[in-house]
Image 1 (cartoon, one colour):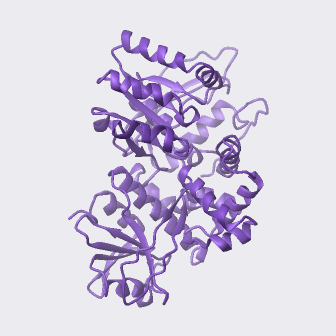
Image 2 (cartoon, rainbow, N blue to C red):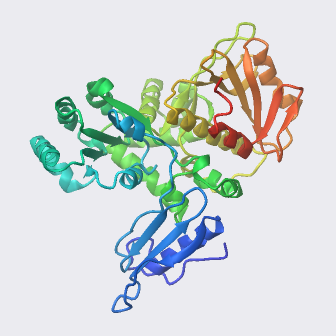
Image 3 (spheres, rainbow, N blue to C red):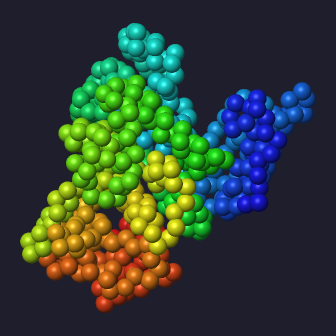
Length: 476
């Protein structure tokens, strides 16, 4: 971008740059990505003893179409992070019932809810004072809910990071039963404690949503592809995407996960063992899981490895994808594949800052990104258990086998080449000889879409993603 942070101030607690530096950096980033159509001063702050106190507004063009405000008072506050308009829709559900909003840390759950429900009653359990108050006296939570319900017509209550105090769900349950017009939005970055204490307790009284990192329709389409290589390295977490030092923030992210999700919650007996396991998982990202081999590499017993994979799923850091076993002539392998939730996290675990095209590593990251898009698409549609993969013992493979409502399937193969050839189609053709495939798709780095052998759709990555989010593939 031809822009560097300057005038570093060691007294500034965030990023060690002045507020003006921070604003200019983000503005340059936004302008570079085509998302700023103008800048307007929304208020005046006199240049008195604190000349860095500014109050700016940025108009975000194209898809976002919102005003975002930045208030930096001598570098002492972060202000609001840039808000991305998210495609997840839960307002219609909230009209009927309460819901859980689950997702990994820093996917933007709190920012999203504060933007959509600015007048809701908000309880942040990451606040030490609030946590200790309700931990020592859960009845105090009940009193505050009762009072707010009685005096305020706004009867939406957001409890952020509810897994920190799952016992509060007893009171949530009572309030839902008592008041038909009350609504709770319960966020969490770990489903582990909620499995028994929360989600099962509330049963059908609360829906469940998952928030993913940023996905294709949340970007300007041209910006998405222009920055695709960068995002393959740093990932799609909103805070990391806008960070002046994304690599440092990704390292902090992994450290925070190990400290707060694993160590403080006493999930793993050995933090060192789990850390070795996590690094080993990154080396096998987007590959079949061999529990014994992972255990040997991480110096962890295979039985413990299975438990640790469940921890990764429960803390929403990754997903196991089952094998498709519906073939007869070509015997299918049965072990699952595993995908971490974000390519930036994968890369920082491996200490890998660059990945070259035409390498196995690049292909794995590309497959990971497209799995994330498919997962988000189905989660946001409220559809589960649709994605599997197929690999035969004779080494034919299809990266994603997606089940339709009709019982048919779509086969999707991911190739990190701009010129896929007959060899790249063999898995799809082999699978189609035994399973009814509504579509056979190869997603790759080609410039233009085309049809091969009258049946195989070759689609560039952005074209595939645009059509995916338009609902073009899996609806009859």
